[in-house]
Image (cartoon, rainbow, N blue to C red; front, side):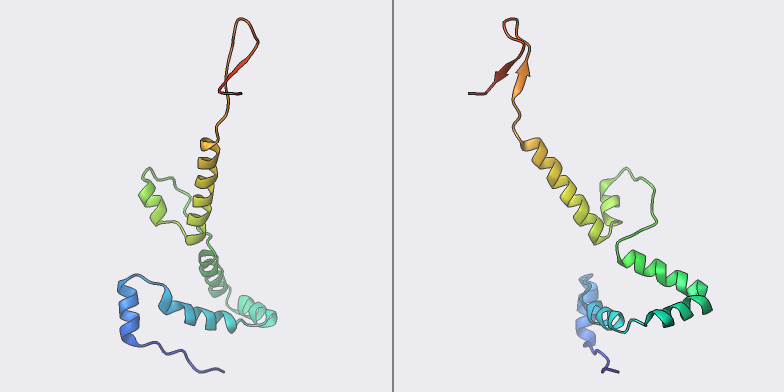
Length: 122
């Protein structure tokens, strides 16, 4: 096994006060690197189904899935409850909507002389 990752306590304290995720990235990398083989995971799931279910729920949340389906009226509450992947997806969706709105489309009016007259064209 590799050597444990050591992070100075002062760095951890400062990062936690800043609500940073940095103190956890090296530990997460080590945990992911220690992924058990499929047989060990199957043994774990069969032997400890409740712990396996908890592990699935934890990693689902880490992957951006959530179980909150209620609709909130306050967008600040929604944003605070969204994962990073959900925020990026919402940002991308909003940018697409803004691009559609900002595209200039010709205004078409009915005219007694013509079926349609385009304003601003030409």
